[in-house]
Length: 484
Image (cartoon, rainbow, N blue to C red; front, side, top):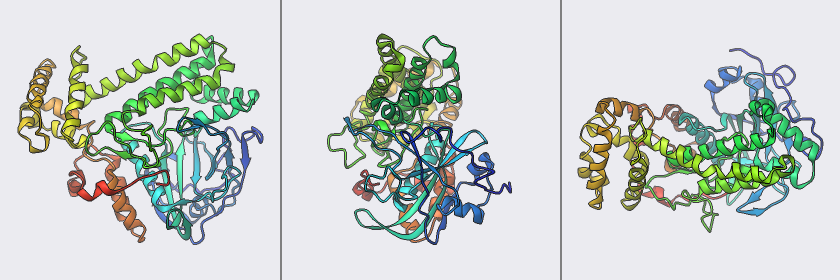
């Protein structure tokens, strides 16, 4: 399309733009000097009604040099389990809302805001490229997430642990509203604004709530359910977020704020992706229960509007079964089972234990299992060197063979369905690192190829088959922290 970007004609203000200083400030961006295009998501751009190819006017917009005066919002939150007070958009500027699909576009790294808290409001190329590729990888897997639209780079120096260069990420979501927005308004006694926030959620994201006897409780119920399903989706692909503070939790059930994230290589339920997480609060196996903890914090913040303590506890109490059922259903699909049977839970549990004991590559195992010949003869697992280990494999494979036989489907049909949902490719940490190293030299070829492959991660992409192999030994030396 040849749509011309215009702050007057294209972007509309975000739905919360006029809520007053207790919630929002309008603040100009600090643009990048001599901005250069890194990546442009032409597929997403066309969905939004933007040009397929970036224009000079787009360059000004997405480098923070445009004439627009964006909006920044206040939010609070619990960080690593402790109340942190006011946080807010410390380096995020919302350009506005795109009429097509009511999507918000936000610039991350465009300079200081009223909520920067002595920070510089900048983002570096390293973390910006990781978030771009990470969010697009999750979208390719069909997992709810914010999206990446554009990545702009510059030679502007930014100091973190070392000297790096600045970048701006343009990201998209129906809304960037967080648990922390509710907490901020509740803890600081802004009842009118809190009610407006809930009205917005009901109008645009939870429309069926208005017809219920307690609409706000129904919204909470929807958020809890979406969060439980999101956690199950993360677990099913071996995704570790790393910083599940309440200010990083979406009220729409989206994967939000990609910092020190990773996809599991060897299956380790206790894996901690965030080097800053000394106690393992956000380890892989803890994340589902942190989701429940965060929902409880949200329920507490909404209690004044709901005025039904028993109802809140009932809604929160459903989280565990919602998560467990969603996770089991996802593993059923990964294993090629269509109809639920009583023994499925124990078979999945014993499989996860075996994957852990043998330090098996999580993604590669399920892709291997999805081969036609393996489905026809599951016993091949016992002789595959990569999966050898305790004799318990023999017992599990036998039980798996019997379970598949009860499906009454041909092996090739099961295999075909499994290959459609078990990715061949995920954004392994070492792949992101290689793309970053090249991008820091001005070469975005690998990043563009990764974006293309991860858009359809279950396809074969034979020219990139090396990216589906087990990671090299040096990948274990990569360290991710809150600055990643």
